[in-house]
Length: 358
Ligand code: SAH
Ligand code: SF4
Image (cartoon, rainbow, N blue to C red; front, side, top):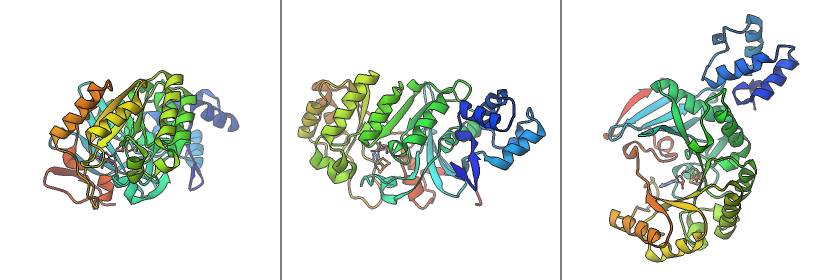
């Protein structure tokens, strides 16, 4: 992608950088040097003092380095989860969440500004779609979190704003770059990608055959219920979606994770659990139950904890490996798109750490 007619150099892989160098009659070994520095999170060509002044000038005249600057930062007083509102070069705002687990730091990144899938329970879906994010903007979310906290991120979940498979090219590019040994070097097994069920995207992802974890936001056992809240289901109904999941599994041999947000009175009955178990039978999978997070302007609410536990037990009893997801950052709108959507006012339970003047 070009911005202000400059090249998005941080989205380029080593081969592309080597081509660029060749085109400029510059020794190709500079490509790996530049790649390493960019993927370390450098934000200015001036910092590349190992390069000649003329090469640095040429780079800054023709390329830009994408960045995610902290517009606002909220730290949960419950568990230390950090929610970032980042500003992009064009002023768009996106969200990321940094979580600390016993095995290390995980960042939940956004893949689009907004989302065009229109799920009714989701703050991102309700706010509309503005644009795709570039691979470099996905990487920048990780790099800024590392820089800001002096940490190394070990896991990535693509579960923030946006539908990653609706932005397939940049998502695939991001996966390749973030995994590069000369880059952030995050193993594919430490990356999860969540989709609302874009079937052609699942098929293309299967072709890449990466050992990442595929999460599918199912949220309902049948088309009647699913189509009520997820318009994507009208295009690719459950049978087609699960067919693609079975194919994906055959190719990658990876266990698929199904997300199921429990909404009281909508999808939390015993009959729903039974129907769901029937549909997932034979698939190597895991069901993640998420108590639905209330979003402004919607009237749904999560079931009480006894009902959630019952649903979990029922599925486990029917042979479907199921757990309830621990909610982190519940006090800081840590769910997809909520912070951006809310008018960024601070609330009693969390404290605002940074607000830029911009
Ligand atoms: N677009 C992708 C990834 C981003 S959404 C997807 O839909 O999978 C990440 C997860 O948050 C999805 O499982 C989504 O269904 C869930 N989600 C969105 N809004 C929610 C809410 N209000 N309560 C609980 N989960 C929600
Ligand atoms: Fe988009 Fe996912 Fe939200 Fe649906 S749940 S609107 S696909 S971000």
